[in-house]
Image 1 (cartoon, helix red, strand yellow):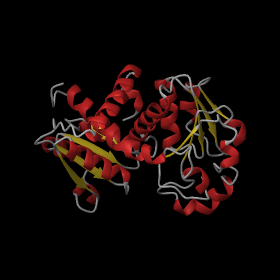
Image 2 (tube, rainbow, N blue to C red):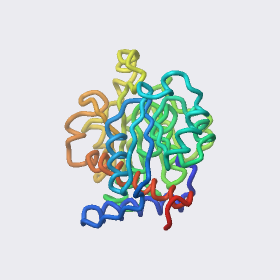
Image 3 (cartoon, one colour):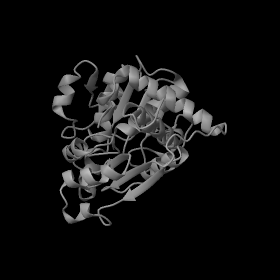
Length: 301
């Protein structure tokens, strides 16, 4: 459901395994522990990277990805979440869900007899953070003790970065306008490790990594004009990046709106690792699926 479902040791092992799986795939080493296994992929929110990465990932592992949307299933006709969870998990070996309500996902997982992966809710996006940390480790080594700056809305990505700060042992600065803070309870739990700094340039001082997201996420399109006004001073541009460490990396979970939350100069520039970050969704999720399958006894180690 979130990064908190693993221990810090387990998460670091998962990152190491993801890097190993990426190297093996690119070297032509193919392992298929998921033969005759099915990943049910439930999408209530649209997706590019999530669908492509999970479907490709389960295929590379020798299994099959089954795409399910509310338009095509009883989920869209009011079937209780509990009933859907019981039925789908009786046939599929693993389930990923990309939806709006996090509590609904937790209820689905409660009634599922197989592992359930949070592929994004309005509260958290843990799979993206696995890819992000993996990307940092590939380029700079351990993220422990580093400083990360999140710029933008206190949304599911921000809150996943907050969990990551606790689990991977780094400092997180959050640059966001008033009224767009992350969950206050989560913020209180992380007092001292996470800090909100309203001035974007102060927030990125000394940062080893700067990350951002669109100003209006899915479901917030009607707030676009309001959010453009609220976030106009929170664009990641060359001037902002100049306040970070000289070798600081830039990340974006994509899709990006160039010249809004980030300039083309930055996202297409030498500090940007967004394309590695996007590809790493594939390998991080393969490692996640393998780990869950081993832990649940679906496959042997």
